[in-house]
Image (cartoon, rainbow, N blue to C red):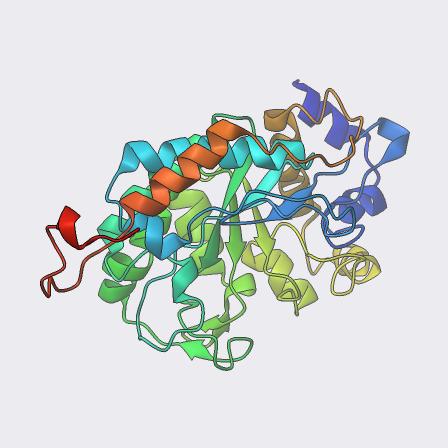
Length: 329
């Protein structure tokens, strides 16, 4: 029996359920009795913000559309490594990025954060980003799973997508991120997919993600997207954020006792979260550290290089090549 199995065996039902909801905006809930630490998440994807309370500065990286415009997986992996180090400087275990939804409509409010309208390019950049971040023992969280391609009424809208389009366009970047990149966390989207909320979508979270793609990590709700106690639990969600518990907590304990949710499902969810703590080293070294600012020259050079490489000339109206005689500065 490995360490995680042994810990789960020692937990009470109430303790197991507590781990599945945040203790605050960025941490899962610890179990001090068994020295189980809390896992810390930090916003990305173009930096590591930290908890937002310490006011420690962070590096700002080019946005998703910019780095995809480099078409340079090696450069993106280096950016991922740098982001992983930034996340560690904020004492975080999970970086909430990359954002890999598809540029479906030019008025999409967060398209700058996503990579492109092309699923393969998006997937290839995702793989490099995830591998870079996770090489620094920080888990990457690919988001928002899936069809979160508009900001208008995103909490209630249903993205109605036919099976072939879903597989070939919208799911492909996530599939590549999980199967090729090895992403250890996935964030479920606010929206519905074909009239079922993504955080309760058994076909999406269990049948496809966990079973077909053999995803070993945990599924975390977008902040405030866990709305249905039983449906979320049975549909494949593993972690309700932010904390403290609203939809789960005592409601989920009652659902298990009422035989509406099997305790074996709860055990699986706990193990998935503890695997992240094991991957990052938090499980063996639970001491929390104050947030710091790296402010490294090598990172500044890398960020500048990425910004330069991302530039795209849409139309050359006598701009290039530059004439030295016409440059005054």
